[in-house]
Length: 484
Image (tube, rainbow, N blue to C red; front, side, top):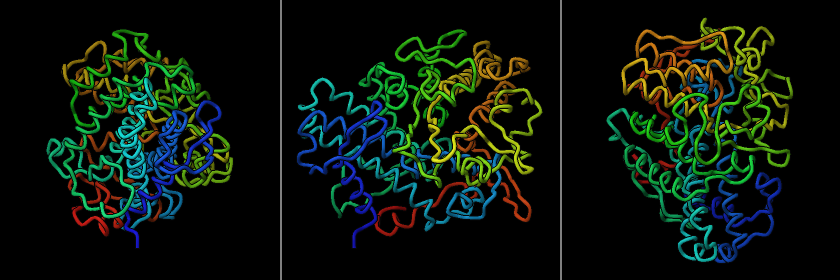
């Protein structure tokens, strides 16, 4: 019998050996001829196609193809379950995940498959690919390390204690950095949370130094990593670590000192004047990194954001989660005229639904991983926390995001705690359905709020509750004797 890790790795090896012809500037990898790993680094086009394959793994349905975002959002208070099916995130919503659940095992397996693909690629580049790729080798390696960093960060949000719980000393993840092609290498103990974050930052620093400043087109600047993608990801990572000084250092690289806020280097990131543009034109300069989909490369109905959040039957959606009337939509300061209400909240069947991802089946809305507004609000929060004041720049960053959708509201908080609270709530509103809410709860070690539907209540989940984190997957426990 093959071991669990070996089976996951076997998938990765097979995927690594399938090379693609790329249409629409790398958006649609289509498999051609299977190549052995002995020849997969023989030519530069084969190396290039392996890189695009790494992105395809990242946007698998069980990862950034949809479910990673959904799990992060529905654990928090803003969505209510409309479907008792545990296959489609009901267990995540009600905090009843167990080690044998498909969701637990599939998310872990999908992320580690991407990590192993990246490791195999990096190993092959050292052995042969760097010489073949020439001047482009460092960029290819940087893309692989960026993808590996994103994958490890994603796993930490479910399977390890927040960094702020013990300053990174708690058990983290098995830190696999060498590609695995066969069995016998399953046993690996967890590194600490701090050690995993250190590796993530090492990968992202390498990526920033070696990625292109721009990928040349709007599509590639959104769907493939560049220098500013690595910087924006570092902002998120440092925020999760509570390292506000480094949030400021990184964000200052791509956020100008004063409004209108733009990136002074690389891709000229900026807020779009109309929030609607971000979700009907997926390649604006606000979208730093997104998961692209086409008719030939769809996420699948049980994975896609639109299928989860749009009402049942509308565009073929499943209507699995609707908006909690006592969640963020109950905020009286979020005005009815705010475009994020008028454009992205739909009344249907006596319930409110998130219509941010409203393309009908096969649900081809791109999944937003990093947006410029997130960098702005992260910077605002970090400034407010480090200065402990109503800092003018922090306030301007907050108001820029709010005024873009609601020109009638301008924040004027009395003190730093009020400013921080307003920033956190703005993140809650701005990124509704984009997988940020649970990340914010975890990094601040807040309880997951209680929520209820008729006949069923989910109690508040405190950081001390074992359900606060997902269990180690049963398949990993079965085959990794050193996991704890």
